[in-house]
Image 1: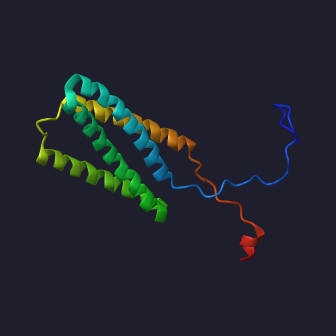
Image 2: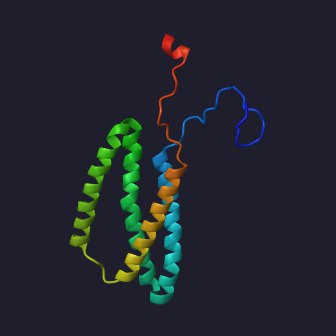
Image 3: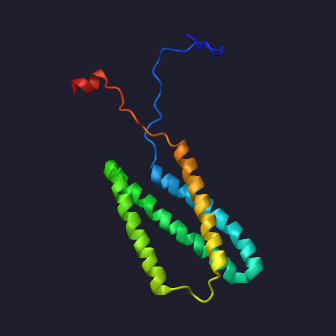
Length: 160
C-alpha cells in the first residue's frame, strides 16, 4: 500500500519502532538555554568592554547571569519534581516563581546597586539573556518528543 500523494516504496505492515526513553527534558532545556544565553552574554560583553571598560562588561554579564539563575532554578525544579510527580510540577513552578520574585526583589532592595554597576549594560545583558534563553527553550520544546497517549496494551500486559 502506498500513499496516493507520492510515489515510492510500499509501506510495510510492521510495527513502528519506539525511540526509547528520552533523557530529561528539563536538563536538556537547561543546557540548551544556558549555552545560548552565555554565548549572547559573551557577545554583549565585547562592546560593553570597549565602550565602558571592565565595569560595562561586568555589568552586562551580571545582568545576564541573574536572568540565567532565575530561569535555571525553574528548570531544576521541573527536573526534580517532574521526575517523581509530573502532575505536581506546574504547582511547584508557580510556588517557585513566587519565591524567586520575592527573594530576588528582597536581595536587590537590601543589597542595592554597587557603585561599579552600569545600569544600561546591566539591562542590556539581562534582555540579551532573556531573549536567547526563551528562544532556546522554545526550540528545545519544539524538538521534544512527549508522549500524549498511553501505549497500546499488549496481550502480555493483560495477562500479567
